[in-house]
Length: 328
Image (tube, rainbow, N blue to C red; front, side, top):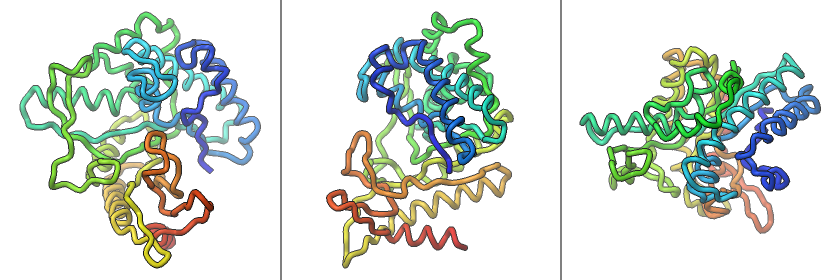
């Protein structure tokens, strides 16, 4: 199995002490990671330390939409840095327990395209890429935070201890990539800190029920981007999939759009592999319909339907197709 250590559910006792804003969490998290490998390392050989730090840090500590509903660039910067320090210390603690495990981490990604070739829009696209894709990757490979594109991140400087960046940098065995969509980006002087704006999907493009543009070439773009990092030896697609409004017909769910989505994104992954990208694996999001953090049970990503009143499972057409695909 591939096991994720942290998918946003921080123990309340730690949150009451400040959560990711309290430097004490670094040692707590490293101790937790070490314990997991001590207890499960004989059976689990692939570990993912964090899932999508961008999401829980921006929404929890930047704009205050998710718990603990903290807001502001200073809190976002502080929580981001301490999360990176904790991740690096956790990786070292895990490796000290067992040398026969693979340690990685997973980031969310978003493909981007400039609204035009105007210099201001191209500069906005670079800021967009730094924010959505590089913010939690560059520091772990020793490149530091992308402060040139995102000057507000310099708010971290006052909290960075002398040895912090050495701890943040770690030779991970792989990087997990979660990818779904892309955005068209334009310069926006009125946007605080970021100075870019994302267009809504064009009317003539396909979107999922999440409102996300379907753009298979985006996953190829992201894979090629991170394949250029010599510090990253291997890549995994740790999430990719689509939410659609599924309906039963004669006891079955004919989710052709989801099947098409997965097939077309997989084709772009294969293209990247054929061009030399060391993509080691692909995980559909998700096997089962489940609880989405924002949408609850309303948006369904699964290739297996779940009746939440009875817990009955029904394999969708996309799941049957994916089974056959894996068997070929």
